[in-house]
Image (cartoon, helix red, strand yellow):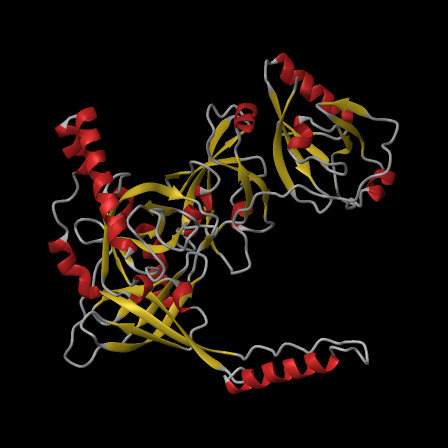
Length: 499
């Protein structure tokens, strides 16, 4: 009874809203505001049969029975609790609580090859014992897992079509040509309602939602719900330009914020899964960090760009190619590195064993280096933000110290090496105290850190640090770039104001 009432109220509100818009903006503005594609029916008709519903099932171990609480002997509630929990356990056994049970889930996918290759999300089929592809014509085929990639959340399946039947397939488009505002169309299996089509636009590009190291999502307001995962996002020509993967929603339903893996990210992954059954990503062996405005100013970059190399893996491709800590990588294999997040994506997409040119800025000058890309192993880390070290709270600082930039520093002595548990080969000037509420404290510097370089010049004594800071002030520089090492030998860069 309440639904018609809400509908009537909505109609009145919509009419008032339309009248208000008409008076405020005029009829032409209203027409422009509601303009969209005339129809997507023709495009949908061509691609609908290539979209499948993915159903999975798995065996789940029985849950443990709730143990009977222990009560003091002779408690007036002892018999009551024993009887109560005995009945609960018997009911659990009667309901199959003591036996393994089967659970199922639903998702979406799409055929990319008439011979039966199907793309979906890895999380749709993760831990599944059986996978089935349900087609628009009502047929159902068992699918085998060809390969999966957990980092980009993609999986490739294979079904065997019945003899004489050719599956409808779709092709990937170029997601790089998409602009914010371009119309897109999603088809999938939301809440088990197969063959559901929604239309929207590209709301944003290159979204990082912290789901993995290669986040580069397309954002769309086309309605995507649970069950749409793994389904295709089409452009208006019927090309797959994304794989619907995630939504932001407090309620679990669409609020117009959905994310899709771009086709240009997915294509090389799918090709590797098809050929090798696994991914073979590029790797160079560097630990990198973001170039901040202060770091850009201290390195004379002109603008914030590139990825700052914090450390280089011994005997890795980068080390063999001549890349050093403190270099800023601004171009890799002909592709601009706009920021830190871009480099791992570019490197991962580069073929293993390919020789590439790497443009770095070193001490204010551009240099072009050559290296051969290696292969990323599953436990390797191509890029990471250095975490601030957290050594034990130090004892009172030594007396022979120098104070500058909110730091109290001292020459590295055997006593300080022992006190801060620094390695025997550690070099630099030790920080013995950090003044609270200063830029140094805000940057995460702590007692026990070492200042290894100031503006890419090695430092061995507090006087070296003082001289470097004085020279920067004389040159009119506003910040100093410090190479900081922690007790484990992990290095990172940070910029501090010199005033």
